[in-house]
Amino acid sequence: MREDVQQLFDLTGQVALVTGSSSGLGQAAAMALAGAGAAVVVHGRDEARARAVADDIVQRGGEARGVVADIADPASVRRLIDETIEAFGRLDIVVANAGVAGGPPYRTEEGRLANVTDEEWHRTIATNLDGTFFTLREATRVLERGGRIIVTSSTAGLRSDPMVGYGYIATKAAQVNIVRQLALELAPRGIRVNALAPGPIKETRIGGGGELTPEFEQVWVDTIPLGRMGVPSEFGGPVLFLASNASSFVTGVTLPVDGGALDLSHAVY
Image 1 (tube, helix red, strand yellow):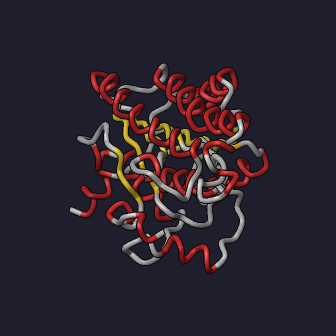
Image 2 (cartoon, helix red, strand yellow):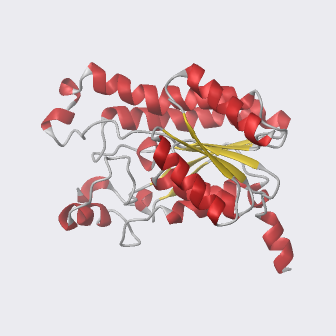
């Protein structure tokens, strides 16, 4: 019986690409997929960081390669997909995880809609939305039948969130609907498309990688029924679930990874 359950999560012989995996949630996703047997392409903007994560996977007995690409540039994304195929011969799993914070929240003066700059808005759109679109467009051309796509959205894409900026909330909501639409398109090819919606998770670099003050962390904790923020390693399990046969009848959904935060009102802010 135990072997049957383990087989559900076995990714031996499969190839995964995880964008934005040189740190944070993406790194946790890459490590989880590699731990289940997949060969993983680790992507990042920083070559040293991407290679360090890939080297860590190799040292643990897995297969990995670190690749640098500009996710907001369609030609660069195309090269990223091509390099994946050249390195491992196929592509089975894509985790479209790369993203940026998207500016300060409206609770700050500079984050109010009237003060959001064109540059900040377009930077967020370019990475979070255009980057996701380019990644999925190129991946669908080469994904093996029965492949899996996982998009990292956010709980901010499922409701209003005064803790994040306008660009972030807009792009994360858009990702959710792209997942729904693409799931319908790719279902005849047996390709499943889902999203994960992480809530407050610390130790990521999306907000610049700085340490949270105890006071600011408590603001987040007060919104989470489990009474604490998450950590990146707790993202790896949900990624593995959606990437494996354990979720073979799941497509077009967005799964929150938020400690129950969506069940609470923002009135506590």
